Image 1 (cartoon, rainbow, N blue to C red):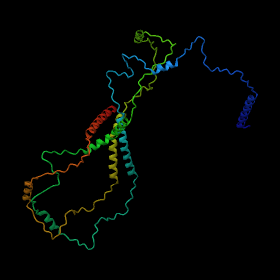
Image 2 (image 1 turned 30 degrees about the vertical axis):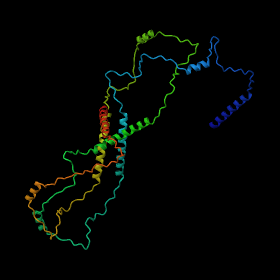
Image 3 (image 1 turned 120 degrees about the vertical axis):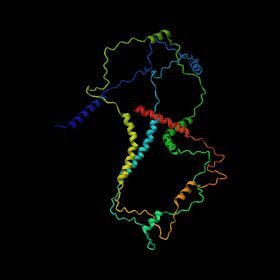
Image 4 (image 1 turned 90 degrees about the horizontal axis):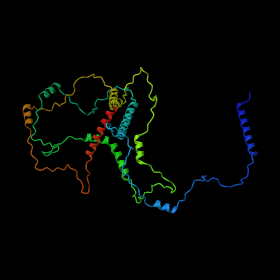
Length: 389
């Protein structure tokens, strides 16, 4: 049996040799006529007009008198029904929230991965080394527990304070009211509006850096160039508009068979899509799940030792040589109820405000504008959540 590959090679060689023999046998005729026939063919009854180039260029360089449009009927915008309300696109705000949530989610996943990859070594030595180390030359005194408890029951006599001058709190004028700090709320608002503010500043910077060139030549050269030999037909505008207003009579379709919808069996029931509510549940459950996993991991890694000794050693150790005086509790409470008479301050020199140099300009606080942005974002977020639901 012959090799099929060798047969293919032999047939290819024969065809190549045949082509070479045919090319060798062909004798080309010499070119006798060098007439150029590449020019366009123009019919005998067509007249080609000439153009005065200088006059044409002068007409282009000169100004053209354009007719003004009396009525503009712009139909490029989409037709919106009277009862339809078009809401603004919230894609940019959604992308900003996605970027913020993405960085937060990435950090949470990194922390969770670090906790999962930590391998704790088992405890092999359970000897308790928590007892205090006492120097050998230190002497520890003994305490009579019964006498010590009786002394505690009797109480100690404390001397009443003759004057209390508490200067730990700042001194406020009588008409001033200190409001609670809103620093935490402002920081949260700043974090939410950070990405949005950054994108707005970038766009504003791009617009501010664009330098437009002034327009020096306003001559209109957009008019079409029409050959003088060309005849432009006129049209009856009123009849043309009447024809457009009447419209064209279309033939009705004998039968319309729409097969674009999917084929659904008669016994199949389609449930409404829960994609919007699912996304809301995922967003709400994201932070809760992260905190639950962290708390669960902390509880799982804590190993509590069983309580074997329940004796109470919380009583203070008092030296036997110390004498504890008794106090009249009723008189002491009366003195506390009466209070201490404080001397009024003769002069107040409040230096709590920062010192600002004369050449330094303090810009106004942007917190109200940031709060307005946050309120607007909250409204958009609520409407977006309602639409998704």
